[in-house]
Image (tube, rainbow, N blue to C red):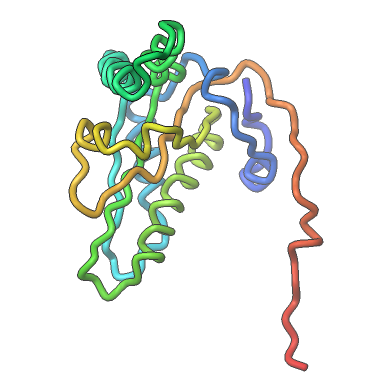
Length: 195
């Protein structure tokens, strides 16, 4: 099973790699583990103590039910789409045992800049990925088309000022994914000196 629980937390985070949602499988986290994941996700920098994010969990039959909304909306947007494409949309949320939608809830009247509130929601997504990895699960943070669709936003019950920061798919992977090409880190590091 990937990740390797024998590695130290630092080694595991240093080797963390997303596993494609379509390559995730059962088992997924149980309810106690989901609670732990959400507590970890909430431990992010949060200027002003706003908590500018919330979580929507999809598991069990809820994944199939939401898939029906995705299939219907996709068919409305693309009436010419072939049946296999519509079925693929219907099955999106069953690709993993657990999907957690991280909702960015920007508070416009706050003294905290919107940018910092958005970053806090992104940090919640990253904490979910890391916490899942440290628990021995695999995960992928996706948005895809339905993260930007107003009708789907309504189905999710989003309020004014809210939007999807990401859908984090969590499950098990039978093998460690292949390493991918990474940017040359040395080309992206600069040490500032006043001249």
